[in-house]
Length: 394
Image (cartoon, rainbow, N blue to C red; front, side):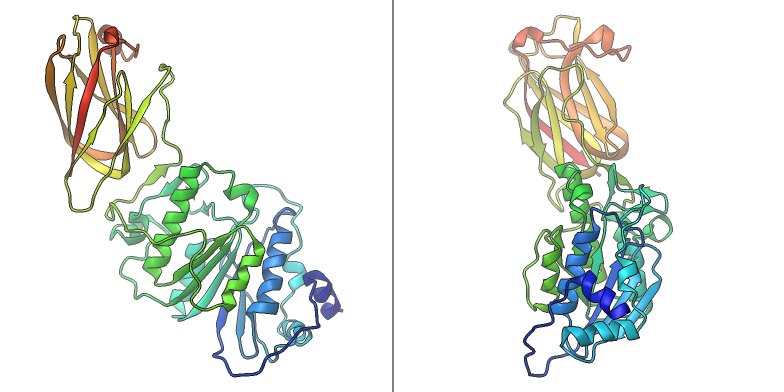
């Protein structure tokens, strides 16, 4: 009865060509969510079908595990390349395929959840080398007091010495493994995130894989992409390699930085690209009125240098300078007196206690109101302009 249910469930086509020739046996670790939504179940089934029928060969070992808690569900070594024999092997090993992919009636935050940190810990505990690691589930982590639905972790969660006490993702001081990572995720949850949020999570998981020593090969919502498990030397899809930044700091990035202050009609955006080994960076700005300046990556801000021209100071206006924290909040660091008509002025702002920042805001405001934290935009006759912003980082 089990064999029949599994064949119907997986949609196995038993007419297949079995090719001769010896190949090295591989080990595949397949991590599944224990609560699977009706929307994601077909995608997970497609992926598993492709894996079993096209990704597994005679002599290969498959380990199925609960991808949230880390418990092993079953383990099987396939004795044939024929699909019907593979189904028999699964049944004999107690792999209850029909139950694993049954949609959950429950709805809520833990549907489709898998945890890469739990899977990695199993690999490290057993020193599993060269495995093909397959996750089927939602990459929006929700455990251990961390929730990635509105934020994503800094690189320090993985490689900072302090991460050992502060983060479940700590890989500090480990002896690296080898292998490849494949992740098939639910389209409706991950792709509903904003583009910065998606990039932040993909980048974080890529850095985590690099620190673990495995190659992140597949990150996709298409279940058919799991067939890449059987293909050697495949280029990565959906993810790249990245250089770690602020490796000593363990914090959470806000998923979306503010694009526009609520009291402004328009904000001109610029970017300061932060380069490794360079403590001072500059951006040239040529638009007028008000600016939001994003940093290409978070940094500990030490000082800010602003060159202003044509401030048209009238005794009632000021320049509001604020930084955007890693959690998305905004903090004023200076209220400056503008320059006079057609006058050039350099403003130097020192920050006594450097803090993590992801960007800054510079704009003219009404001085009296701003001193009471009531920000009212002041046009300064439409002539005010800054030409350069330089930051110093610790």
